[in-house]
Length: 497
Image (cartoon, rainbow, N blue to C red; front, top):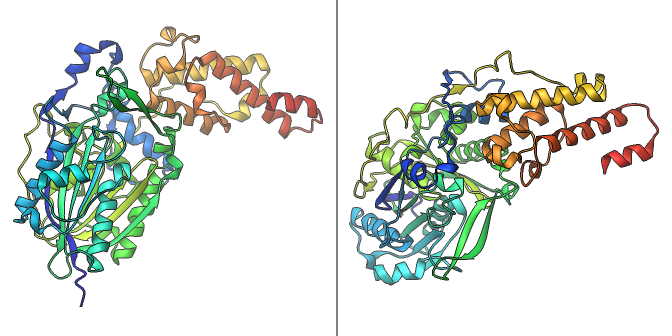
């Protein structure tokens, strides 16, 4: 009879040896980091009742809008003598040692190398060579969900009897993939994780899962082939024009996957003892907590310590939770990850007697408070920030509409950027005023208030506030024509164009 009690037997992590703090960017690229005044959010243990998707996301983001580093404190990056392969090797050896297994006992290895040094394929064969494995070894890729997708594959193959066990190794080298003069670099870290999948005690291991594609997020990031200073080909990552979909889809994906996984496992969210979310931003754990309505004590957020380490995040959060005693044998665990232009996945498992690898170097300056998770509520806008509605605008003359829109947009920017209205140059490209985070909030605020669509590209390139006002005036004029009894078809077509 087949043993279906299959899950994680050992777990290990490995990180770049350099701890890079915010001072690195302040000294090297001071022009990238605006000096913004910090406002303190109001904290509240409120429920998610009545909140829509944008409310949940924007409330989680609120405490970080005035932080120029968006919640980043430290990140681990590789030194000159380190690479994705060296980190993978350390994590793999550590996981095998913890499981008291030799490389010759490994039946299968699955490797997910996100941004390895070579272009074209991952590190599976190179790692197999270094570990002196005799078993099959292949690459798998599903961006930030790679660890869970590999776990699902390993579980299925062991379940069928094709293999007795599997070693899963995952890495992320973000520091070498993003241009340092791109603000995206502030959020990138390097790390690797590994775990052995094997037969466990009865009723332990994987109980259910739910995996869906994230095609809606295609274009959120752009990966381009470039050459480095030595003339070697490299993949360069930058934010894409579809980046707003990461926020728009965040709540739906976590609910779909987590609710689907607990249903498949035959349990409820209330029965889960601990949640391990991938945390690619400082506020992502908060989004998941509010979307699912769970207690923040039942999860962990290591973003301030490691920043975005992609597919390694779920492994690191599991490792540190177990190491800190937040997870114990026979606890019900739910792990959730979301990968851009790939998959979102949730797995429910009953934790076994998981052996842990060596403890990584402690953080240098991250405090317990910075890693704490709170549910936040945005303070209501002060009275100086005007509200606006499409209905009121349509009742005004064209001249009044322009003044109303100008005041509304300027005051929102002033509040969000925490700078006086007098310092906002309407002719300055919006791309120089807004990063992708505030750009998304700005776009969504306008669309929610005015009930019109504003393409994300209107916040890129040379588009400025004056261009945005002209676009909105045109949109409103078109709405007026469509909703009126006007039969001026030629005028409608002109405005729609």
